[in-house]
Every structure is written in C-alpha cells, then in structure tokens.
Length: 231
Ligand code: G
Ligand code: MN
Figure 1: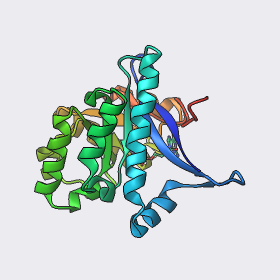
Figure 2: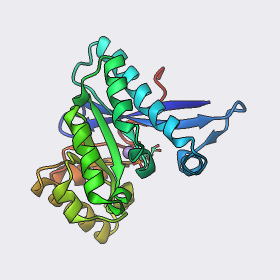
Figure 3: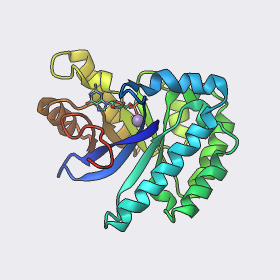
C-alpha cells in the first residue's frame, strides 16, 4: 500500500525540470490516503522505519535509472529522510547497495534532511554525511527556518541545497515579515555558496518574488504537483 509520488523541481530561469523529489504515500485499499506525517512517527516508534527508509532509497534509485534510460541523463532525485532514518546504522550500506544495484551515480541522489538533525550529535551526523558524500550523495536541508536553524551546523555540514520552508512563501506578497524572512534566507544561502530552493510556490507573484531575490530553484503546486509515475 506504500507508493511514491514525484514532484518536479525546476530551474526558475527557464522552468526546466532539473530534479524530482520522491514523496512517500500510503493509499489504503478503500482509496483513502494516510499522510506521511501521521504514519512515519508511528513507524519510527514500532521499529518499521528502517525498512521504509530503505524502500525510499531503493525505489528512488530504481526510478531514476528508468528515467535515465529514457534519456533524462542529468536528472537528480531526492529522498526525504527523518532524523531517525538518517541515523539508521544500515543507511550507508543501503545507499551503496541501491546505487550499485540500479547502476546509479551517487551524485544523482539527494538526501533531504531537516533541521531536527541539528539536535543530534554533530560529529556523528557529520561522519555519516561525509561517508555518504564519499559515495557522491548530495544533501538538501528541507523546511529551512522552521526548526533549529543553526549556523554552526550550516557551517560544518556538507549541505548543498537550502529549501526555504513553504510557510514563509505562502504570504510573501501580503506579509512584509514573511517576505523579509524569505529574502534573508535566500541571502544566507547565496552567501554560503548554497543553491536555494523555494518550496510551496502557489502563484506567479511568489515565483517572481523569489526569483527576483536571487533564488535559483523552485517547487510548488503552481509549477508541478506531486504525481504518480504514470502521470
Ligand atoms: O517536508 P517537505 O518539504 O518534503 O514536504 C513536501 C510536502 O509539501 C509534500 O507532501 C507536498 O505534497 C507538499 N507540497 C508540495 N508543493 C506544495 C505547495 O505548493 N503548496 C502546499 N501547500 N504544499 C505543497
Ligand atoms: Mn522535502
């Protein structure tokens, strides 16, 4: 009953799809959907999360290989991992296994983590990230600005993409504070040499705002909704 939806991420200059984010979905036989923020914490508590983490990585690599075989050579795919999934002892091994099995280059796989990871032991997080980076894997910091936005972790961890949380972009055109926060996060990302992604773009005005402020990548219902691979 677990499946993956895929939401494209575009270059805001030409609107070309450059990456795809994989999003886990649980559809019950009656067609109803249980959102991941409900079942992931339960899976974490009952010990099933390790299998879900592996499934997410393996399905992403398999799907990427299929798209590459269709000619989308430069496409990258991202997977969302919770802090508990990220700290799974088998993570590195699982990533290596899936990359090899599906014949994927590590630099085509992006792992999205959230700032909650910043509450864990920095040297252990850094160690895991460096080991994965050694395989080519790239990191994105998701939902940025809503958690423990530590500059010290931003300084020390090998993060390539900063994803501005959608809550700041929702009111960018009506709320001066949201606009200031969005603009400031874009500046932080640019000044740190990171690629900035605006997520949750729902209209043209928001797209133009982030683009005019230097944001290179965007994602959101205005551009593309998450969809099944058939769609
Ligand atoms: O935590 P993360 O940023 O990975 O969450 C992605 C979630 O946000 C997905 O479940 C996706 O369906 C949802 N999402 C994607 N684009 C938009 C959007 O434009 N608006 C809103 N409200 N949600 C979105
Ligand atoms: Mn994400």
